[in-house]
Length: 258
Image 1: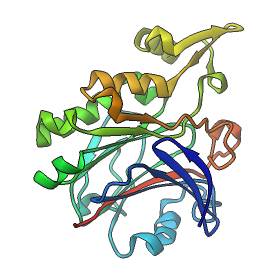
Image 2: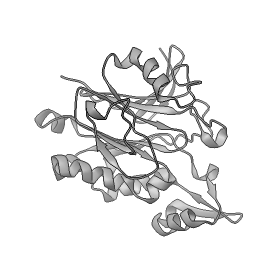
Image 3: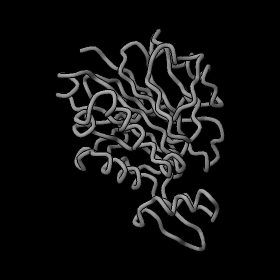
């Protein structure tokens, strides 16, 4: 194992040729990995069946959930009945089961992970919330939808004591948008500090807006961690705007029995 880059609350490592982002501090009740550019993800062309076969080396025989992501705000609760080959349309997963692996895929959109505190998980039950929050998901506030799903399932304290990680995503300087319907919707929703105009185009700070939404959702500011990695500038990331039209990074989460 070669550690080649350190970030606060994240660790980017090369493990036998795989670029893996680990989310720190690592919870004892969950295995969390963001698989980035590397042999597992390369040349899969986004084919989830190919990724499932490759990930079986890591996930064992556990069924894999891999929803059909549509840039919406639907959150599905993880269950073996929703695992492959079933692919519900959703951009978020609430994982509470030890019997299934949850996954979402990314190339410029932000991976968002919310986990309970170790104390809450020990006294109640472990869980994980995975979100796919690209520009459209952020405009529609998938963070709000996901946190309300957690609150409805486990109570308000499950949210207020949780921590959140916002992984690599396209950064504002590399994400200019021309004027059109979705740009106007973004201008109406994003906080002014997360938008700026340059040369007639609007630039949006997606990670910054997600951080604001997490705060509004009830998380403490000291429990929100943003990687700061720009997918368009970091070669270990896949980036649709840099030319990766099919291959994707994959957020992989499974709960672990103590």
